[in-house]
Length: 248
Image (tube, rainbow, N blue to C red; front, side):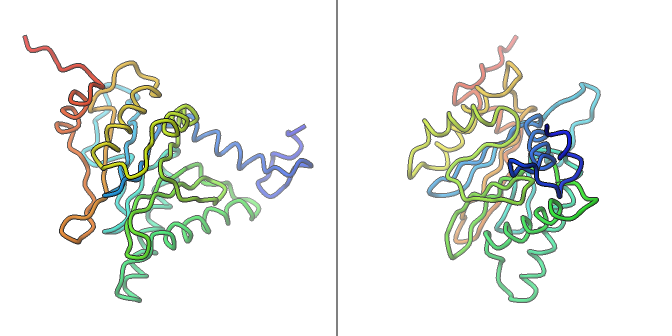
């Protein structure tokens, strides 16, 4: 039945569904997962790096985490080439706002402007939706720390804890059980690593397969910090997610 209505993004099926947009969401289900957790003193983002080949040169820059502005960062799940376009759009929007008003762009306003772009790609013929989901982490003076999730349809929502990418249903149900109000940043990191270790397809969790970034306040200024692989390895051992390497 769906075959008659899935050739274009602009055609509704009789049940009121846009199949191409749903297929874009399916594509994200195959991507490396990302988890975001809101804590009382910051936002934690953890992402799974898909290592496709041992011959691949691991990039020195992060491939799941991106800084959009001094006060906003995001984690990505889906098609990276699509994500790069949207991240550049968001960076330009944030800089234009700062240039015009001499103040950082409110986080939700930035998320909404990006989702407006995404939504346009579901309404006009000859375009395909962006096959990417984002987790946005940020701080502004209006609402403090915030975590937003957006999908290819252009929908977005504020979350206390959210998961996108592969096995996101299982991760979401684990977060629902274990998330507590007023959680600290350190506890949020521990919870994110625990959830990812149980929902990831690979058997052992190592620092090479993960990326961890945090947004927090440091001396009244918003700071975005990416955890180094060395510190990440120590954290995994400390929280009992992986075994300490045996020294010979």
